[in-house]
Amino acid sequence: MNHQDVPPKPASPPTAGLPKVPAKNPAAQNHAAGRNPAPAPPPASVTWSRPLPEPEQPPSRRVRPGTQRTLWKVLFGVVLVAVVGGLVWLAMWLNSGAGSEEARGNPGVLETSATPRATPLPLPREGVQPGEYALGDCFADFDPEALASRMVPCDTAHSAQLVAVFRYPDSEAYPGAEALKAKALEACQAAKLGPAANEYQLNFQRSFPSSTSWDSGDRRVDCYVTAPGGNVINASVLP
Image (tube, rainbow, N blue to C red; front, side):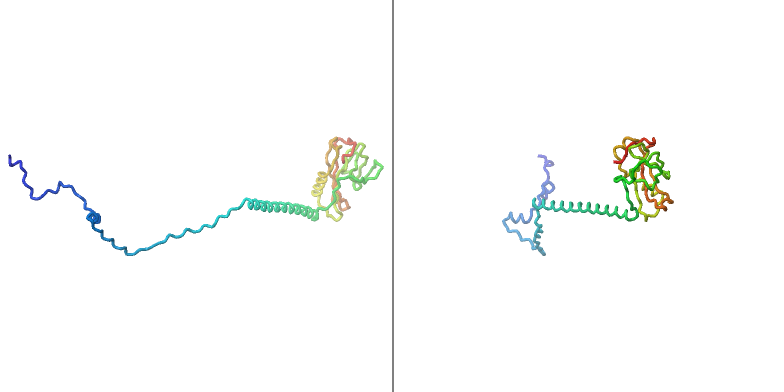
């Protein structure tokens, strides 16, 4: 044997090549050794807390079907009373408004019915003045600006007929030409015509007093139907 091939005897056992074993828990070691573990030291202070009780929920109120129907009926009744009351109030307000307007300065009498007839017979009559005209009178060769007219029976040839009259009260002050024109237009719009009016070509024509005739006592505004073709009407155009 070659002594150079024999390694020298180590002075201490080698440690570099040995595996490292982790140190065991002392408690586990004690348990493994059959010894009781040492008790853990008590905490410095202990705080005990009790769980708070859950807040009580108010009992839910459920509306029974019968009660719900009653509530709807009551609500419907309240709304119905409010609507009816509003309509009654509106009607009273409109009536009071119309009456107050008439009392404020628009009084007068509107005539649209020719019954009974005011103009005496016999006809025809010549030189009838405008103040003598009556609702329903018929005129031949009519001129609304003339101081006199020829009044004829309505079943004979004529060119105009008085179909509406508005009379102001005697105490009324002169309202002016524009107001009189507007009132004459209202009278024409309120005129009631009969079936015979559909057989002729007719126009509305207005007549109202001047300031001079008003001072003389003329308080009427007249509305006529006139035929542009002359004396071609042979019947009354009123109902």
